[in-house]
Amino acid sequence: MRIAVIGGGYVGLVSGACFAEIGHHVTIVESATEKLNILLDGGVPIYEAGLEELVHSNRKAGRINFCNNIAEGIKDANIVFIAVGTPTRKEDGRADTQYVFSAVRDIVENVTHSVVVVTKSTVPLGTGQAISEIIKSIKPSAHIDVVSNPEFLREGCAIEDFLKPDRIVIGVESDNARKKMEELYKPITDAGYPLLNVSVKSAELIKYASNAFLAMKVAFINEVSDICERSGAVVSDVSEGMGLDNRIGAKFLHAGPGYGGSCFPKDTLALIHIAADYGCNISLVKATVESNDKRKLSMINRVIEACDGSVKDKKIALLGLTFKAGTDDMRDSPSIPLVEGLVKEGAIVNAYDPEGMSIARSILPEALNYASTIDEVLHKADAAVIVTEWSEFKKLKPEYFEEKMSSKIVIDFRNIYSKQQFSENGFSYYPIGSSPVECKS
Ligand code: NAD
Image (cartoon, rainbow, N blue to C red):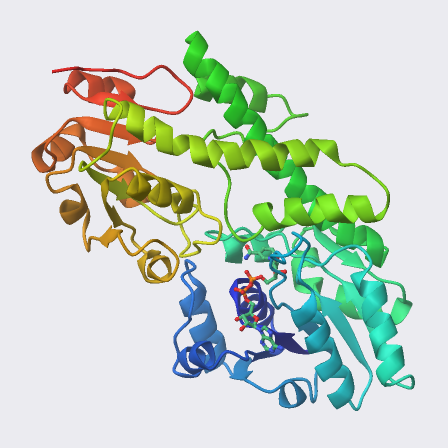
């Protein structure tokens, strides 16, 4: 089939490359000149494991190409995906759908054949209906079916998630669109992955409900981890014990510095507004947002307390900045309030992240210093904070920290090290969700 994808960001690029990989012909329309030029030059503008190779091989096979013009991108497409951003609207916390509607208008004004328009962006309940109304108002004679096909990929394992999904959700109202969507995904469903056909509204809500539920799970285990720290229980044991129950499941039960990224923070906020629009109060999600905001801020105090009550003029080394490993995405990362808070308290903050530093430079306070290696970030540091669970950090031994740093303090927000190993080497080691070891010299 011939597909157009409007938006060549994390979702558009991964979806487009994966559709090409399963045999379709894909045109990705990207309006940002800088990103488009990288794509046209054979690179990818984001970091996602395996993506550059996938794009390259499919481009070589003639199945994927790029342009900046919707009219050109959709000219022979059977299906047009909209994968533009739906960020939080600053004024009110709702999902900002202006880029989606602008793409719809461009599609409708330029389309000359029958086509299925699919929202892959995460869009509020009722957006599909609003899109149908826009189509009717601009070109009542157009043969356009509107479909919702939310995306559930996780950055860091996006290609695997797309090609081997837990489920594909299709919100359709017509047989024509349903058949086209089933044909599109046939190579994936033939491999045994389930496709769920529902209404457009249900599909739109499935996405928000799923993300809010997962965010709630993370916030829940983070609060449980506080109880562990004060009581002597160990959160990894509690998570394991809970996760072995099939009704609960082990995923998203890792205590840490609070969730971030491009989805959970904005989708939880948006769901609160969606609920209110229908006269409902989704109080559990409100509590989740509040809990997570507090969680992120509380990380500043953890560092201060580990540094004997003050970080003023102390060298703090941050290992990691991105909201999780495997991505360069800095959106709503827990590192943002942490850096801001430490800088405000007078710390000398140095950071190293394997992939996130170029984006971080445009977001984080100017006072943050960027190191180009782990060696450099740890050099003469008074305390090291593990912010992101990158695999290159997991390999580091206590002896290595000891050699580089001027004090033996490690604050591990991701529980990637062995408390015993660090305490045997005379470190004060502060994990999440179990009692710290304090070695005062
Ligand atoms: P992104 O910001 O990385 O990418 C969006 C891209 O669309 C940008 O490159 C932008 O330049 C481009 N764009 C905007 N308007 C355009 C237009 N009219 N024509 C052509 N290009 C245009 O965003 P993302 O992370 O890929 O997210 C996209 C959507 O998918 C959001 O709704 C998000 O909530 C949802 N989503 C994201 C993830 C994720 O992990 N990132 C997962 C599931 C769903």
